[in-house]
Length: 343
Figure 1 (cartoon, rainbow, N blue to C red):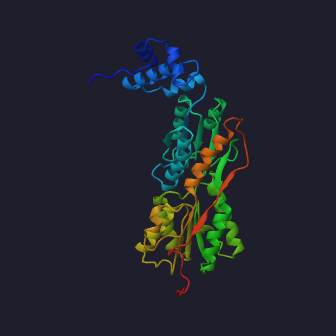
Figure 2 (cartoon, helix red, strand yellow):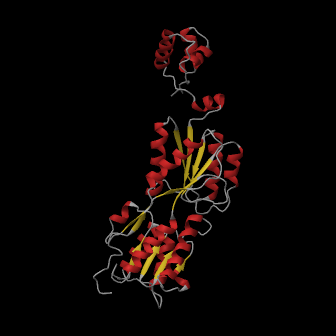
Figure 3 (tube, rainbow, N blue to C red):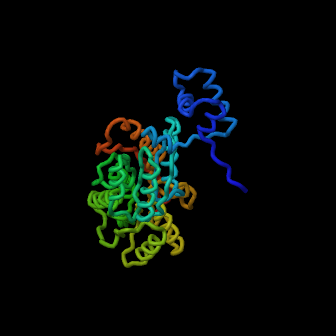
């Protein structure tokens, strides 16, 4: 099948018998072009199935109507909701969104940024991959005049706006709940500590352990345990140790799910003998048996705030500003609710 040639403003100009410049002005509703000519141009454009070249327009005018968003996992409910929030605001303001997935790989993230630079996007929104330890690629985008806005997983050293939750308050609320339920030996399945969000969650966990005078055994903190496979191996080892934890606080819901699966395999009753709390409020946490206690991060609102932050600052030079804090909420479910049970 032959490839159909794309219609250009030159084709429209020839069909209407005016100059290409006049066609361009007609599309922009320029007052120098008469109403009848504008209507004729629009009818002809529709007849010829004309589609504007947005990239060419942005290069010509210096203003792009395309935004780029880079996420670790697009099928993760949290990130999908952030993208939906971004698109909600972008659509209302006549912007388009390009979505890139890194699959937690730095090299994929770097390639995504290079692609977005070549696409001349108006702004890049990003949540860092688990393997990202440097942000030279983001600084390069900034050097090209493309602003960068970070969300959730951020590099505090990068000079850019950021949209986050108060991780310390969220973790302290979860730990206060676990302590109130009588759990004394709480383990933490932590994320990569070079990512600020996971470092903050770990510090908050350690603060709560001291505050509630809980067991402080070194093996109760498992570093860099963000995948389901790693979490299952870590939880199996913890629960089969001489002094197993009686609760697990995971830095991500996928790890909490892994903990629940291991507990069932080992016939350990949840929540009577083991409490489990996750982080992010993935949909499956409400469907497991028992349902998993977790922390809702306000992901859709985070996405809306990410896009709004760009719109508020696009006419000014984007720089390091105080982070925008999104409210979070502890969702208490059966996996930690053992009040009234014999423990």
